[in-house]
Image (tube, rainbow, N blue to C red; front, side):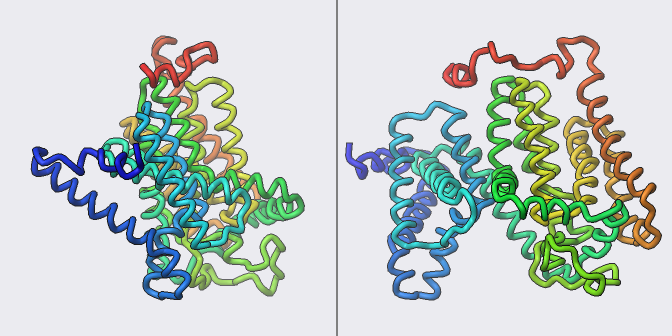
Length: 432
């Protein structure tokens, strides 16, 4: 079967007896496929001929696969598309054809030269994700389309939203967060940054752990399907949406944006004396740390997984701590506030109202105390550490009490519903 004949067998191309809603969807899909095909076909010409408008439009289309965060989100969508359900030969052939076509176009156009570690592998995942989304459109598989496109769409919307919020928050609270970290006895993020700067393998590992976080919930979802439970994907995406709003309550950017010489400690004369500072271009995504919140959520969800899988998610938490601090994306206090913030969302989904109120109040108290300068105007080493240990330790203890201990029997206790390595593999369940 030729490629064109294969595409012609897609159900929306020759279905005159379909309902009106299906025909409307078919018309929309045909238009979308035609536009994407036209843009791809014109990409090399627009870029080579210096067409400004066409070049920007093509960069918008092709540049997605060259953004490390969007690439990993697209790769996560591809994992879900290929592994959640068994795909037909026609679908796999379409994925292969579209992947090859997109890879060829990107190679000819030479758009977005990648400079980050692991770029070819991650860009390949991004191209594969776009091909899977295109296949869902061609075969009109709405459920798979939602599952495959959820991560890249949400990540794109989050990035656009955070970029738009810069206009509304021209100043940031970076000096305040910097001074609180200093009240802990030193700048741990700067120390971690110097550690990563001294070791290229360690820095590359931290960077990959930071940008590949969207892939982790895809594998967590596979484990949850094996357990016949659900929730991790919805909570992961909801956490990103709610967190994008929460981080604008106390806007800050991170040490590498606030201090250009990071990880070199700034001179005393360069330290801002005010509570805020002007940062016109840096994204406001510091407190609470979304990366830390996502890693915690996945680790807490991994309790019933096999021990080796839970160990992997625990390692992800450790690497996220190292990456967020060492790459200069966050202050220590950003990670601390992420603990009650994550537990608040987890408790809300479990309909535990009292725990949700306590956690939300804890997050609000941190933001108010930092925003008003109550914790930084009169710094105290002992008080700062007591607050940090109490918040982190209290959140972990409360999560254990809420989600592990309260069951009456071992069979009802999620701590005892752990998968073992002798159980049938997920592939067998999927095939069934």
